[in-house]
Amino acid sequence: MMTDQEILQRAIEILDGRLKERSIAMQSPLDTKNYLRIHLSELEYESFRIMLLDNQHRLIRFKEMFRGTIDGASVHPREVVKAALAFNAAAVIFTHNHPSGVAEPSQADQRITERLISALRLVDVRVLDHIIVGDQDNYSFAEHGLL
Image (cartoon, rainbow, N blue to C red; front, side, top):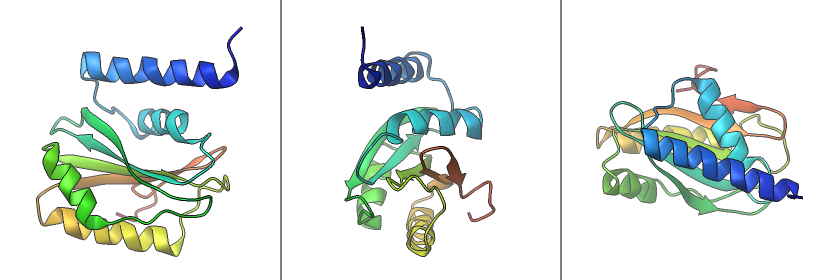
């Protein structure tokens, strides 16, 4: 019998395979949120990741950029810009988890999102969203008019 962790890992492998094999675009905010919840909700540390997307919003790469502690991670705009350029991304979605389980953004989350948007605008990379993953829910900056 498989453990919960093994089941989650298998689900992640299946989702990743489908996205790569079929070049599936992130069709809706709900698709994206579900994908991210599976990847991030069980982590005990904060992980800041980036979904690098092509012009059709198909996933090129889902990359962990920064790993932190239980209450934060340092995010460096220069490294995010380098990753976007290295993978020739046309658009990105930022995401990180809150190990506390509460998906509401902090002031620091809002400030770094603004800095990242400004940095990526200089190289013509669109920021589609920043999604914070909590235990029971997610918070979308785009859905709340913060982008």
